[in-house]
Structure formats: structure tokens, C-alpha cells
Image (cartoon, rainbow, N blue to C red; front, side, top):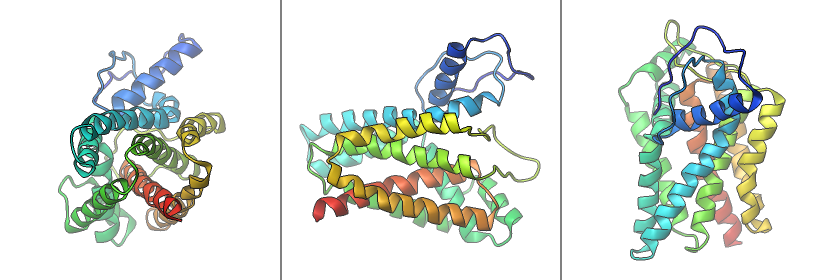
Length: 265
């Protein structure tokens, strides 16, 4: 992932297009291994501009997974093709969201007080809660995708990755950023309504490729989003970067399961 050089203050001389282009590159470089040009004079406020492009990063990641799946499925059984598509997304993102999921589950599962939860999340070691959580989520994702007709899996991958990242953006828009005392990572902490509208458009756009009867598959996504948002509000009073990764993973697998339930009826 690209690490831009920091600047103590924003540059006031950039045009709107330059700011948006930097925001897009920052989002891609922050969440994937895709090489992007160096971003001189970076300041953390630019992450607020980049945040609205997170669902677009999801489209890119999902498209990469769809390509890998389609190529593998042409010569290999579907279950192996699905597994390879999952490996592809983990490689492309550097397991960024999966790491957040394990840290968040460890913290929420093993901590009692807010500071204890945040301290466990900061620990780079993975605990039993995290191991069980990531195994279950990845297993459910694999099993669900393996039950769809092969021609629909690529579309579902793109839609699942974009929608789930929109869910993370919605957490940023509705809750405050919290951090463990004395230690934090650069993270977007502001989400204006205009940015949220752009993120919503990008996050929902791939759903247009799905049969309209499958739109009910969004219901479990909304339910999981509300449940986990309430958990975060109650336990730590907001969100961390790890919590956003966990939300992305939870809602992605919820989307596949919800659509699968619609397809089965």
C-alpha cells in the first residue's frame, strides 16, 4: 500500500479536479497493492476526500476477483475458482479488511471496558476470537458463492465488494472516530452529505446488473449494519479503522447470503 509523504498543512492551490484525482489515487493506494503515483505534500485531511471513493475501490477489487474467477472457472471446478477469487482479493488488498476483522473481533470479544477493547485491537497478535471469526466469515463467503450459477458470480463479487465498502463509509458518516490513547493511524474522520451521496452512487451502481427480485438480499446487509453499528456505539462509542474492516467483511458475506436466499425462493 502506498504511503504518501506528509505535509503539515493542506495545499490551497489545487483545482477541484486535482483534489478529486488525488483523493481517488489515495483511496486506491491506501486500500490496495495497485501502484499509484507518489502524492507529495499529503495531509491527513485528504483522507476525507478519498473516503467517498472507497466503494469505487470495491468495484476495482471485485472486478479483479471476477476476472480471476472467470479465468479459473474456464478450466477448473467452480469451488476452486471461487477460492482463487478470494485469494486474489486478499492478495490485492493485503488482507487489509480481514486483518481489521480479526482485530475488531478480538477486541470486542476479549475486552470489557472501552480502553481495554481498544488496547486489544491495537495488539498485532491474533487471538482465539479473531481466528474463529475470520475462519467462519471466509467459510461462509466460500460456501455462499459456490452455490450461485457460474455466470452470476462475477457480478456478485463486484456488487458485494462495492456495497460492503459503502457500509463502512456509512459508519463513518453516522459515528465518531475513536482511538486508543497515544496511538492512531491516519483515517478519514469526516463524511459530508455530498461525499456520502457519491459513495452511495458508486456502492449501489453494480446492483443494477442483478435481477430486481434479488434486491431483497440487501435486507440482511442493512440488518447486520444496524446490529454492528449499535455494538460499536455501545462498546466503544464510535468506530476505529479495524471496525470499518470488520463491517466490510460482515456486510459482504451478508450480501451473498441474502441474495442466495432470494435466489432459492
